[in-house]
Image (tube, rainbow, N blue to C red; front, side):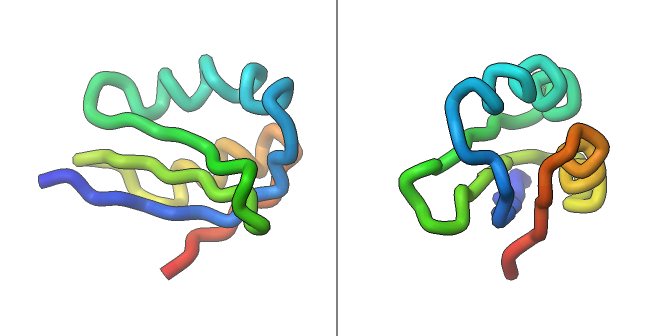
Length: 72
């Protein structure tokens, strides 16, 4: 069963997403998908996954210099 995790981020532009793409692809792998909504005021990251925890995703972004907070 897939879970959708939603995060508020400090990612602001496509160039930043391009830098994160290989890292997120590796983390999410073949078990899910992800996308950013930069039109949203919270610069939303949505991750659909079967086996990842929110802390893994937020840690990845934070290690790369971005704020990332799970929304409930």
